[in-house]
Length: 173
Image (tube, rainbow, N blue to C red; front, top):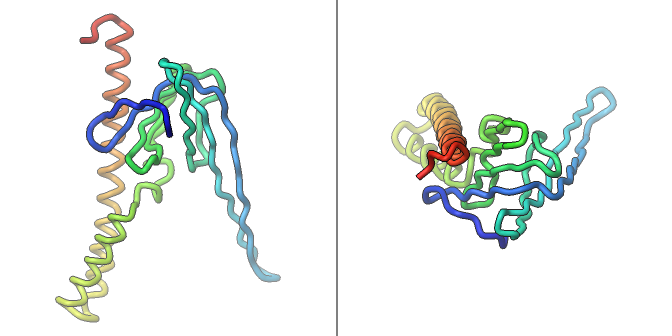
């Protein structure tokens, strides 16, 4: 991403502008036997956004959901790893928190490290008898992380919408 993106907090970037191009890609995966077939698709959108300063940025959104079309004005919340966390479509007034829509995307490398450390600590403290406790700890950790990150993204999107509302009404600072 070469376009200038103002930062929001330490971990987020904001990309706002007009959608100039949207391409949807779907990859199909299938496998099975004579009596059982498993089929799934992975979707992604490649989106080009032209910012107010004229710069353009390409963003890849790994989701089945992208509620915007060419010509719509959008704001995207993007984390340091360039994963899109949220989208606000100012043209249609719709928004998406991708941490709620695609929950596995909220689980990152740091979480894998945390779960591994939990496994080591549980094994050191309780041995094999700690396995049920480990399973409960991991489930609690995963649910807590997903819930807290989704709430944080909701709050950041609300903050963006409120700031946009203030600047449009002339009350912004």
